[in-house]
Every structure is written in C-alpha cells, then in structure tokens.
Amino acid sequence: MHNHRSIKRSGLILLIVASSIGLSACSDNEVGDVSLGIFTTKDIKIDSLQDPLVTGVTCHISSIEANLDLADPSDSSIACRQTGPITADMLTKIDKSPSGEIVFKKSKSIFFKNMKVRRILDADSQTLMYISYSTKETSGSYKHSLSTVPLYGTEAYNVVQTTK
Image 1 (cartoon, rainbow, N blue to C red):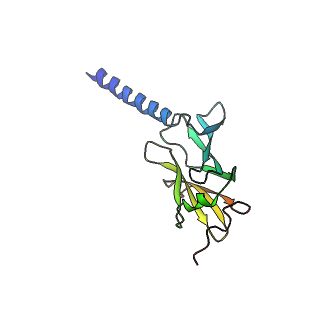
Image 2: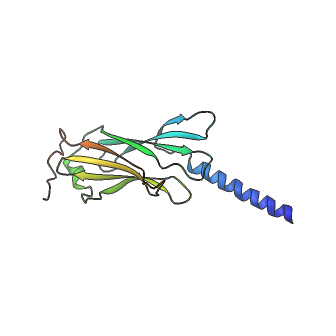
Image 3: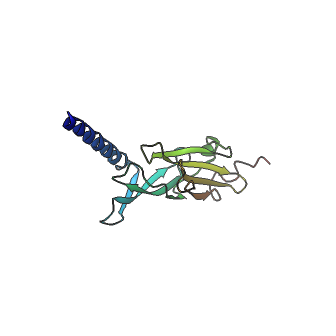
C-alpha cells in the first residue's frame, strides 16, 4: 500500500511539472526565443502583439520563462511602434478612461500570476501609452514597463481632445 501512495504522489508531481511546461510552451504570438545558457532552464521569450483596436500599433514584449518552474519571473519589457495607419475611427473605439483597457494577457504561473498589457490614451500629448505589468508583487514591487506611440503625423492626431 505504501508503494501505491508513492506512485500516486510521483504521478501528481509529474503532472504538475508537465502542466508548468505546457504553460510556458510557445504562444501563437511568439517571434523570438533566446536561451540564457546551457546551465539554466530559463529563456527570454519575445511576443509580438498587434493592438486589436488600433491595428497600426505593434508591441514586442520580452519576458523570462522558466521551463521547469511553476511560476515565471515577473520581469518584462515592452516596445511599441506604429507599423501601419492609425485612424480617427480606431480612436473612437478605444477606452479613454485614465486606466485604459487591457489589450493582452498571458499567464505566468499556475498561481494566478499574469502579465498584462494595457493601452491608455494621453490626450494632452496625443500619445498612446502601453504598459506591461505583473499582477503579483515580487520582492516588494509590481514589475512593469512602459512604451509610447505618438499620434503626431497620423490621421488620428488631434481627433481626441483633452477634457480639461
């Protein structure tokens, strides 16, 4: 009987490890994968994200994935650029509140840690801001990174006025 429990426990551990590997598998958005060396199971993954409403913006997000861990580190970096037209019609569809809206979400742990990307419009400077952040505190900090896309030179420039 003791041997049967040991097999069940080993099976449970194997299932948890397999689940964590599945969580860190390639996403449909992955465009880069950089190994951090042969003595680590951590890689830098780079995802490409086209804003679903402002389709003229593409963001590249890099983050660490730990292939055999149950949770990935919280660090991430984001860079967003105009890669196509940004129209006035696109801006009419976005959330213009100070907290903006989530445009991308990726699980980083089986313990409910997520990495999110939020779009916020700064109407004063006519700039779209994209912030990537972790939903769990790590070492006393919520890890985050910011990138901006100016509307200057696009059809959407000065379409949304400030409300001050």
